[in-house]
Length: 213
Image 1 (tube, rainbow, N blue to C red):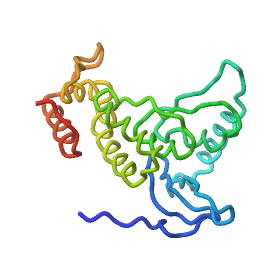
Image 2: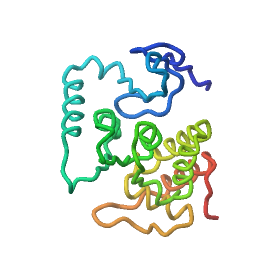
Image 3: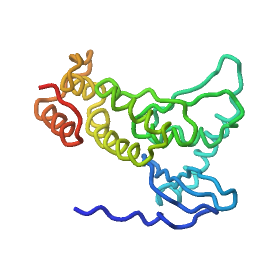
């Protein structure tokens, strides 16, 4: 099936020309854009059409961003956000002059968050693909954005089939498949069924990652 072109690419929105899609989450998509007035590259988030119509969701979004921006204490040096949308709403609300660090809590939001100023990530998928997650971080700081974006989407698709579907049990199964020792999840969690295990193995292979034979 041919992927449908993104209708926002090469359009102008809020004084920015949208250049490429960096990632997506539960509430919308992240784009790299050129701010025409400031002549600089920026990242913007576009909420999904359904959520953009929901005033309660919009107010919740703004309230969380403002609350995060007001956090100032010597003992608070940063935070990790593992929510489905990722830390975008916090990153865009923070004063960049503050020494407050944001870590992405999911590989789905890791790459887009780096563009917005996140300093790193705590990623469940790094338990089974540590080198690939580190490679994505390296590619970003080397400004090899095409390669980074490609790797991001491969990791994000796999993440949906692993922790996104099976949680901790899926991550442990993926660790066993990729040559690490994941073992069984602790009670009350149960291991993934055999059919799901083969599906995870197939998805890892389909995305071009190494499998322990």
